[in-house]
Image (cartoon, rainbow, N blue to C red):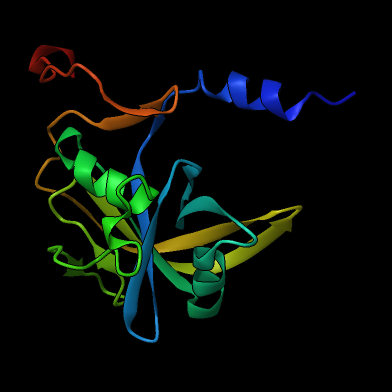
Length: 172
């Protein structure tokens, strides 16, 4: 038995997820998109995964490039989220126009003002009906300038900020 697409979407609108921008390059031109299907897989060797729609521009770019980076967004980066999610259409032709970013070990763009980032080499691809799951081995990683700030999350079709308090050192 299958469920309707409407019910599927409604169920997952109740799933709060972290927000991140996945980046790669096509002929030395940076590209990126917001991803919520991002997860750690293993720590030895360190690996992560994300999925991209088969027809998305980023699917083809990551598949050809074999490298990608992911920047985890902080609450202060809602404008970056909106730009790379396609909500702010002002920069659809070049989402990196006017942005400050750094270059990771592989040459992929990262946003060091975020919470954290990983730089990856693709080690496996798992195609499915309408998507590809990319598995990447982390070759470099770092904490960003906002590593101790509140995260930006996506919940019920909106970017939201979680309340955040610094951890009590006694409880660590």
